Length: 358
Image 1 (cartoon, rainbow, N blue to C red):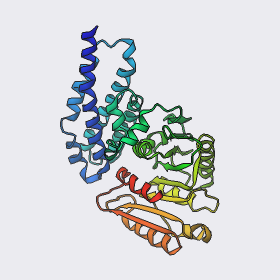
Image 2: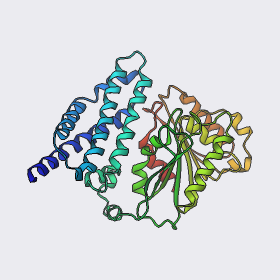
Image 3: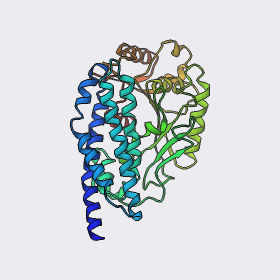
Image 4: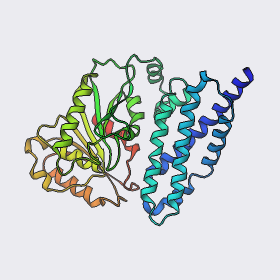
C-alpha cells in the first residue's frame, strides 16, 4: 500500500505544477487575445499541453483508493478543461475567423479553476496559487487564511451554467460577517455567465478581503433595451448578499466587462443606485445616457473607466468620449487607456481598481 501511496504522491507532484503552469500561460494568452494574433498566441502554448496530458495519463493509470477520490477527481476535471482550452485555441488558430472559438476555448479555464478551488485547503501549492504572486509571501495574510473559516468561500445560488438569473459570490475567509467590508459586484460580458466571471476576481477577493458578487443576467445578456429588468435583479442579489455579510456603505463597486460595462453605466447612473463607485471596462457609451441622469447623482461620482487601445468591438474613441462626457457632467473620472488591451477583461487591472476603491 505504501508503494501505491508513494506513486500517487509522485503523480500529484508531477501533475499539479504542469496544470498550474498551463493555466498561467493560458491566462497570459487570454489577457493578450486579439484577432490578428490568435495563431501566434496558440503557438505560445508550446509543449505545455503535451506535458500536461502525459502527467494526467500517468495519474489516471494508477489505482486510486476511494479515500483519495477527492484528490483525483478535481485534478482530473481541471486537467481535462485545461486541455480542452488548449485544443480549442489551437483549432481557432487554423480558422480564418477563429475569434469566437478562441473565446469559447479560454472560458474552459474558469471551469478548471473552479474544480481546483475545492482542493486549495488540502494542497498548499493551490492555496498559494489562488493569491496574487506578491501576496504569496505575506505572513499575516497567510496566517489569516491558514485558519479554516467557519464561514466564507465561494457560494453559487441558482447559478448552474445552464441557468440564468442566479449569482455566485465569494465571502471573505476568516472575516467577521458583522464587520463591514468592501463589496464588488462584477457583471459578465454578452453571452457570458456569472459563475465563470467570478474567477477573474478570486485572487483579489481572497488576498484583500473583499466580498465579490457575480450575477448572471436574466437573459442572454444584460437588459440594455429595458434596464429595469436587470436593475431589479441586481437589487435582489445585493439584498440577498447583505443578509449574510456586512457591507461598507461607502465602498460598493459596480463594475463589468463589455455589455456588463455598458450596463454598469445604465444601472449605476440611476438616481436609486446603491453603488458608490463605478468601473466600466470596454463599455459602449452614448452621450444621450447623461440626459437621463440626475445631475445630483453624477456630481462627484467616482468612475474608473478602462478601455483598450486595440479594442475591435468598441473602438478606443468610445472610451475617450465617455471620459470627456462623464467628466464634463461632474463625475470624478479616472480614465485608463491600455495600449496592449483588446476586447478582453484585464485581470491585471483589478488591484488598481481596488486601490482606487479603498
